[in-house]
Length: 316
Image (tube, rainbow, N blue to C red):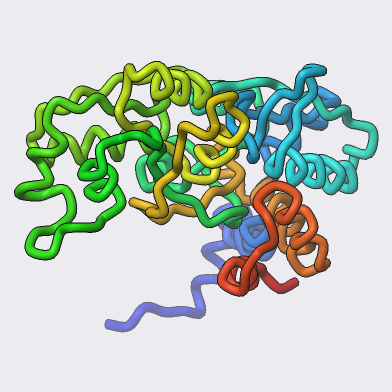
């Protein structure tokens, strides 16, 4: 037997108007569901009256502390632009920008504990790091490189550079014999550290890995012959070796072992804050001013680099 639908309105009325109330409330609930959630980060900045920008003190040309104690670098300049954009958000016109120094070992913890609102450094985007942080549009095409002494054995340099392996994959077979009993180093907590540990384990070579707490310490270990090769973000290795007093004794090999974008990092799940960051970066990329900033820290960008940024620019 079919139900008598003519009784439904009366049933709603007898139930105290619950059905009518639900029908009236439905559009409001749907409208609220369509509204973007408020940014936890922006609300925190608004309440504190300050935006805390975490910057690496030891990762030039991306981020570093100058002799006068001020933050500087490519990523720092982009975060300065972000701070100016954030001030254009409702209720944030008068916020202060506070620069907070961080290092490779504690950066993720500092971000998770909300001691900084964004990380401005050489933050590589990996699946493992996405488990603890969110990332902006890419700001640089990065990857792991290696620094060695100029007088390093020719065979070691060939293996690390990917040459002289006609019959075996790089770092396989006879290559492992060259790598035996070598000492490799990386900055603790970096992508290079994770990558190097995995590669040594895969190859089952008796190569020692010891960690340092900064790029300068890694370069010094190489100069003092406590290490045979220093692995890290290639752009940072180039700058760290160039600034060292023993620069003529060092060389960054013309090889990139991995290809990973570098981006600004912020707390997971805050899509409204992501929108502010990505809007800032996309606007800057479109403005034509990127080439000047890039040239200042890395040299004039080639066509491949400019194409990388075009592909990572979002339209309004």
